[in-house]
Amino acid sequence: MRQKEAAAAGKRKMKASLGSRLFDVFNVAVMSGLVIVILIPLLHVVCASFSDPASYVRYEGLMWHPVDFCLDAYKAVMRNKNILTGYLNTIFIVTVGTTISIIFTLIAAYCLSRKNVMWNNILMVGIVFSMYFNGGMIPFYLVVKGVGLNNSIWALIIPPAISTYNLIIMRTAMASVPDSLEESAKLDGANHWTILWKIMVPLVKPTIAVICLYYAVTNWNSWFNAMLFIRDKADYPLQLILREILLQNDTSAMAAGAGADEYLISETIQFATIVVATVPILAIYPFVQKYFVKGVMIGAVKG
Amino acid sequence: MKRKMKIRKKTEPVYINGRKLTFGERVKRDFHHNWMLYLMLLPIIVYYLIFKFGPMFGLSIAFMDYKPAKGFTGSQWVGLKHFKNFFSDYYFGRLLRNTIRISIFTLLTFPAPIILALLINELKSKRFAKWTQTITYIPHFISTVVICGIIVKLTSSTGGITSILHTLFGIPQETLLNKSAYFIPIYIISELWQSIGWNSIIYLSALAGIDQELYDAARVDGAGRFKQVIYITLPCLFPTIIIMFILMMGKVFDVGYEKIMLLYNPAIYDVADVINTYVYRKGLIDAQFSYSAAVGLFNCVVSFALVTITNKFSKKVSGSGLW
Image: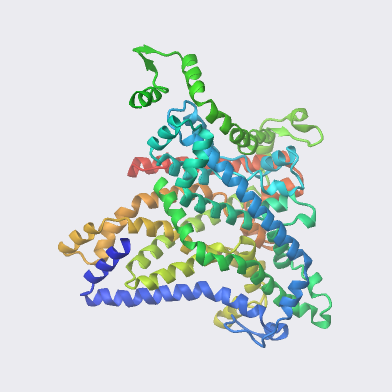
């Protein structure tokens, strides 16, 4: 529908003035430039990871093709057990965390979107307030420690379980479902719990997909809480392992055995690590992209 | 069925048969009808009390000399001591200056996604527009740690960007993140690189919602493309712009401290150290809980005040706000 309109608008613009056509050329040029600027650093990372370490160090500027193709960096990354355990921990956090988050968000959104419930407005005020005012890092740390989650992988799952922003999006989606569905289900003897899972959930599936993705990405990216709460390296999520390798230059474990080239190979190892840690996300990205875009629009409607 | 629905609708009204219900009666009626909802909400309320409101009450340690050994109740109240110490702290001026400076530069990037959305919207080829969008979103899906890793690699003494800048402008080949002068440009440009595409989505969706007849009418009146943007597109986008701006104001004082923490080092603390990174170092590295909670509270209050003021202002000027 929208595309048709756009196409029609495109036709109408056919007989354009010279200035208008010049602008079009300029616009395409600017956009192409932007696309290139966005891609160049990523291309550099990929190319560097496949390059020979010694050739990489001699190379000046940003790469657009691998120099002396070589897989040593990847072999070194594969030797690193930490990346594997990090991956497994992150997968655990993403799957379990997202499941818990979505269940809690659905329940909260359902209850808070019901009409004629006396305390809902007051609860909503409190919940929205917590979005704009929070205690900050130190009290949060003390609270999480206080409930005994310190040094446990659950510290990365339970405390951030509900995102108020996602809750509001979900609540809006549920509030827009016609009341008559709930009423007729009630006449059939269904209680709120059944209505939520049997009637509501199927109706708001698109929103659930969007919010699942939001939670999953947040869980995947999160490193700060892990830095605060996790001491045991076996429990490190991937991002924390990456931080050690990329930002604290801890590549010794992987570079060991490379002999005199240890220093050289550590450079390309870092690039290979980035690729290994990012490719899975970028591989699913084209398939989920439209849901993300949809999510932003749902949020926009909420305003 | 109709009768039943009518009864149901009467759970909330204050008046029944012309008589005003007392508060107690209303609570009872409400609980009678909705007890199951409250039961379902119970875990959620507990969660919010512990993890969202708990830290707010925990802020009271900012007015205490909190000692983990003595616990929350055993520690001594000291009033505003930590705030006074912070305001006379040797680093107070520097922290405030850095936080405000980075906030302002972040705010300056605010129009960028709007401009991008307008330009994408003007593209004739829809296929090209779609490709542009897809590619500009990509950096949003790369984690902060990896982004910072890429930045550090590219701006190191042997990094690609350093050597290009060396060839173009003759700057010495050294680690750029060790030089104060380069920190803000690196921070802001990488921020733009990462978020410009993603942040433009919301404007693009608002643009798609504009009534095409407005443009037709403008064209009949002889408005060119530029005039159409000024007189139709921008006014239609305005509510979205306002909302996004207020939302940004809420976050701006928190300056992406997670990213700063990954990028900075003691050599550039003079420009890169902001309130939140200082809170982290004082509180969690040096274990000065009360002092850093006070510093954090200062940050929270300023943030909250900024949102509230912006919201009030926008309501007065444009009639639209967050609440």
